[in-house]
Amino acid sequence: MTNKKVLGTAMIITACTFWGVSGLFAKALFNVSNSITSMWVTQVRMISAGIILILFSQICGEHPLRIFNDLHSAWVIFAYGVFGLVPVQYAYFMAVQYGNASIATILQFVGPFFIIAYQALFRHLPPRRIELISAVIAFIGVFTIATHGQFNHLAMTLSVLIWGLISAIGVATNTLIPQNMLREGRVPSLIITGWGLLFAGITLLIIHPAQPHVPNIPSVWFYSLGILVIGTLIPFQLANNSLKYIDATTFSLMDAFEPLSATIGSVLIFHLQMTSADIIGSVLVIVAVLAINIRIPQKVKD
Image (cartoon, rainbow, N blue to C red; front, side, top):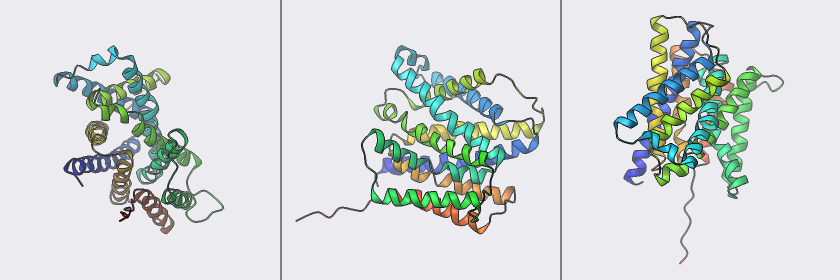
């Protein structure tokens, strides 16, 4: 493994761990008051982080307004925000709000299989045998978690399952849309992340302008800052920069640290009780995603 790949791997591990921790901040925030909604959290997170990153990029001399001189780049960043960041954040928070951070991140973790499906359908890259087997294993894992091993009924609400899978689709679009732009280096990652977040946040604000009455108490400020700084500013920047050194599949492999940190945190902080079916299903999903990254060395013919 080259030094650049080690750096990229370390960056995405840190980012994914922080994302898992951000789910814990979000669950704690939802527990403060029923008036706090996933939409409000997502809007505040995206708009605040977007503005901060754009201002920081200006301070760094990257001239963030220049993207509007290249309409193609501007549209790609807009698509990244609306079709990548919105589902990966809003849908995830919905799954956390109606379920918990652990189940939300496990469901989101199947995102790499949507990447494989996209590559097969639109890039004409047929899935390998290990990827097909892993997809079946992941499906069994999700099904086991959703039913707690009792296959005649759902152990979670249908809304949690749907929102979790939408967030998994967001993982794929969030990874694939800006990939070429990042690799080509046409636009700095700081600008891509900043404008993507701001475009997405403004879009959500236009769609849902009504704002809830949020309690002005220290715990709300603390958890909100945790989501903003630990769950957004730091990990999104690390993740986008990591794509310069690693491919989308390796990116998804390191994403295992998100469900692990979210699950451990949920057990330790919120005293989440995991059944044996939950543990087995979670392990199946994580193993399945790890397995798709197996590369068997080809024998060199004499």
